[in-house]
Length: 148
Length: 118
Image (cartoon, rainbow over all chains, first blue to last red; front, side, top):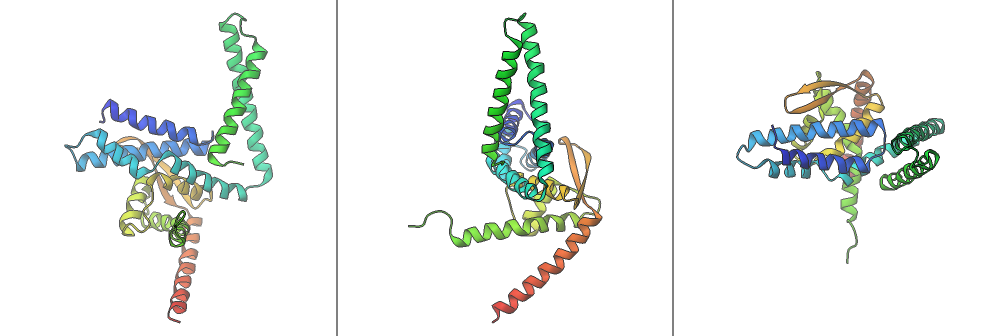
């Protein structure tokens, strides 16, 4: 339906927005909604302006959808309101699950790297480095979206 | 020299933000069989003469919030234009909250009118 360049523009936009959102099911849900919204709006515009280039039309659509920063800001506002209502226990549970998930991924990735390199990369060293990256990424994202 | 948005602009943004959730509930209620996000964005713009027009992407965090509050339900529907899309319907609780808010909004505007007429 849409050409390769248009698809690339959409995926770039989706990627930029994803980077500004936290790792959560809610954010994944939002991204899925955004993608279908963009395609739907684009299809409408193509139908109304069949001679116009898809690239111009998708840029119009993305302008109407808003910048990734607009969306992340609104998402953070809604999350803050929700968080204020949720209990401390829920928040603690969320952070523990998130930390455990990051640890499991780091261990698996370290094991793969260590195996592939025949032990040239030390397993425990790789785990520590990957966990450090996970924590840094966590802080950067939290700062970007104003998460506590 | 004026710095940042004026009082009037800030007030408009805050007021609009406050009524947006109510307006979304009102639109979803109009569609018993459900409506997708793109449709809600279109109606927000058209039925309010652009008064409640928002950047369309910022609608989805609001929809997510209303879902979490169990005021809206959602189901997936195949779309001809690309990925499947979510269709939003009002829950029983959403309908109750909407009716309650409608009464409240009506009362507020009635009292404001009285205040304005001095």
